[in-house]
Image 1 (cartoon, rainbow, N blue to C red):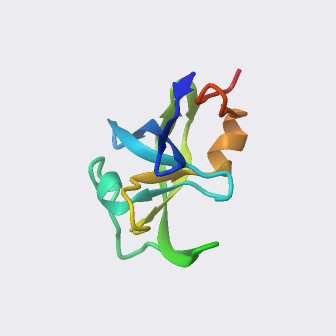
Image 2: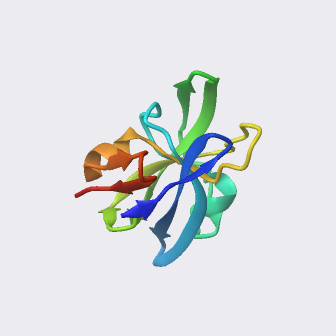
Image 3: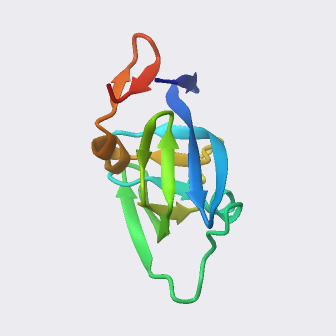
Length: 127
């Protein structure tokens, strides 16, 4: 069971990302049930060796705020407490939304893990 922190009225969690046999903890990750896919800030992914390459394809994520160009990348694993998906495809983008957001956990991860969000207790779990 992971704790949810409310920052600016929005739910945030910490996740662990693994790529290139390196793991980092990312503290300020928004839980967004309205986002189909998970996306992480380019600088965050660079810390584990995930960087843009000349062969990457640009795709566009669309949401209420408009659309954003992102790159699709595969990482070894993403973990939110005991909820782990291996391997996992993430989007890489700038995430400039006027507040510090290092990443967004979307419904792709939430569905694969069977996540249950409990706002009464500010927790997220899959059991």
